[in-house]
Amino acid sequence: MGVRRRVGGFVLLVNPILCDGFGHCAELAPDLVHVDEWGYPIITTEPVALSNLAALESARYAVRGCPRQALRIERVHDAQ
Amino acid sequence: MIAPESVPRVLRHAAGRPLTLAQHEESFGPLAPGAPSLELLESSGLTGRGGAAFPTARKARLIREQRGHNKFVVVNAMEGEPAAHKDRTLISANPHLVLDGAQYLAGIVGARHVAVCVSRDDPIMVNHLQRAVHERDRHGARGISFELHTPPWRYVAGEESALVHWLDDNESLPQYRPRRPHILRIGHAPVLVDNAETCAHVGLIARYGADWFRRLGTPTSPGSALVSVSGAVARPTVLEVPLGVPVRSILERAGADPDPQALLMGGYGGAWLDARHLDVPYSEDALAPLGSSVGAGVIIVLPRAGCGVVETQRIARWMANESARQCGPCAFGLPAIAEDLARLAVDTPGARAAYDRLIDRCGAIEGRGACRHPDGVVRLVRSALRVFAAHIEDHARGVPCPASRSTRHYSAVPSLEREEELIWE
Ligand SMILES: Cc1cc2nc3c(=O)[nH]c(=O)nc-3n(C[C@H](O)[C@H](O)[C@H](O)COP(=O)(O)O)c2cc1C
Ligand code: SF4
Ligand code: SF4
Image (cartoon, rainbow over all chains, first blue to last red; front, top):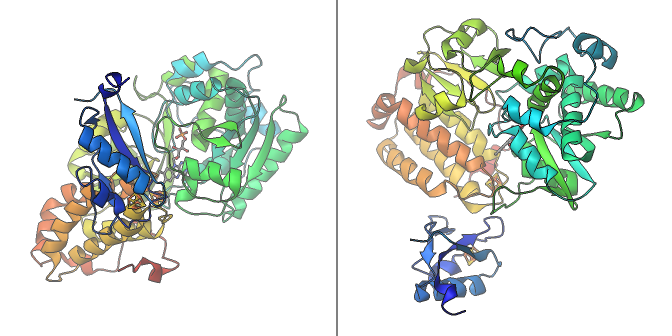
């Protein structure tokens, strides 16, 4: 399992309807998320390799830390 | 049969009032008996006329592959676009052709219900459709029931997920759909949404076949399409034109200004086309490289006497007000863009900064709403920055054109109902 899970990549996705724009995610996953001038998250749309464990970890923090449960990690297979 | 090389097609036999079912069947012949065929639709190459120009057969196939007996076909006659008048023209001419198409599509996907949606703020359309639906019910439509639904008018109410959400839950709000294609549902029932004009074309393809349909248009954009021409024209008109004809010929037929400055193509979420390109064929694939599109079949003619910055600003402001305000980037971003454009339109000292901010904000907002409403505005603004570049340079230097101070405007933007709502900061 551990090996297979590192193949491919992931993206962090936000549901803009749920998002309240307080920007906690940008603090929890600063590498993936920065906020726009109104405080709403702008998330890297490029897939991140699953082997980048630090990024995956911070994405998980953001998902768990989001007060509106607006974030989701989605696996993609065509990562660089 | 309608001679294949002639237009109008869907607007054929239009009289002063909508055709009754009997008149309609007498003019066009009855809808062919036999099973509706997805292959026929596929080989016709019909694309959606509601704005996205997506192949109609591909959407139908996706819904047909879904399980369930309770599927819906939704006819989108909301026509949220203020500059568009085509669905209304079509329904005032022949509502039954639209219903024929919907019935045929229902047969293809295996739907039992057809929901026709028209804005309640247009009582004449409601009336026409009510009568047509009533006639259908009396004269039997082979196990398919027709219902009329009348959501309140809003620009985004015509967006397909908002429309389906309204049917499902009485709220005209677009939904978040992270994966595309996304199957919209009423309850658990899969829904096929098609524009009213698209349905009318299906009604003709069902009768006369795919080859007949392809006799007009280009191989990649076959058939004819309705165009609402407004702005610098003698009279705003709706025309039916073969796809692929030069844009100039549409202007000629509409009696438009022969030497305009630019055209707004596709609608309020469309893009400006420089008047240098008037000879480009009117089709998605010819317009796309120029950053423009057929979209919802709208052409707004901007004469040389007009100011593109001001027109864009008025449209953007209206579009900002029409945001459903569910998503931050749309609710805050669109008013901010409209504000920047306003700075650019008059000679305030901040014009240069506003120009730079506009470019940043367009980049920041794009693709971040739940629906494509903000993307439409971004597209409009970017096209304006491109097409009116020289003109904008003057504005940014603080010397706006005389036209920007004129009170004559060419895009008939509705007045804002609640202007104060636009102030967010
Ligand atoms: C903000 C927004 C507003 C829309 N308004 C309408 C509308 O008023 N009427 C319409 O037919 N399609 C409208 N659309 C397009 C629909 O979402 C959908 O693509 C279309 O009805 C599908 O039909 P078609 O495949 O026949 O074009 C809108 C889209 C967006 C993003
Ligand atoms: S933490 Fe969640 S609700 Fe807060 S800004 Fe990020 S995505 Fe939006
Ligand atoms: S993008 Fe704008 S119009 Fe679309 S759902 Fe979000 S707030 Fe509403």
